[in-house]
Amino acid sequence: MKEIMHEISIKSPPSTIYQALTQADKLAQWWIPDTRGESKPGNILEFRFGEGCQLMRVSALEPDRLVCWQPTEEDDSDWAGTQVQFTVVPVDGQCTVQFRHSGFRGNAERYPYYSMSWAVFLLSLKQLVEDGEGFPFPNRWIHQ
Image 1: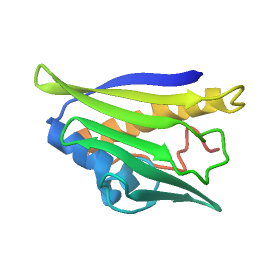
Image 2 (image 1 turned 45 degrees about the vertical axis):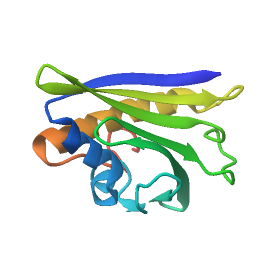
Image 3 (image 1 turned 120 degrees about the horizontal axis):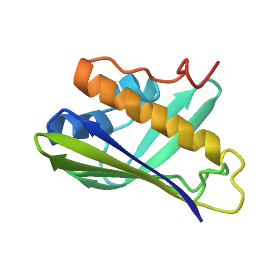
């Protein structure tokens, strides 16, 4: 199985990054502007973009440290059966966000696109947390 892994350093306390990964209004500022739901284990988050909607079940939360999502069972995309994980690690007055999107089966045709997109959106997360403004979907570097 394929997996996407990225790391990014963010000059911020873990609590601020965790909020950006768990609060719908913050997720909307760096990833998908139309984000709905409440981050609690077992809850569903809705990420709506254009005609599409990605439903993600919150599978694990550890305050200021870990956020995990899994696409819902109804998902029939390349993301079916995958897991998205953000781990926040404090390092010398800032944090490293370790990102992993794992469990891609077979030949996920858009795998390179997903990897590049996640890298750009992690930069958007960094910019939101450090500078107060991210660049969510549709991102001009990805969706032109």
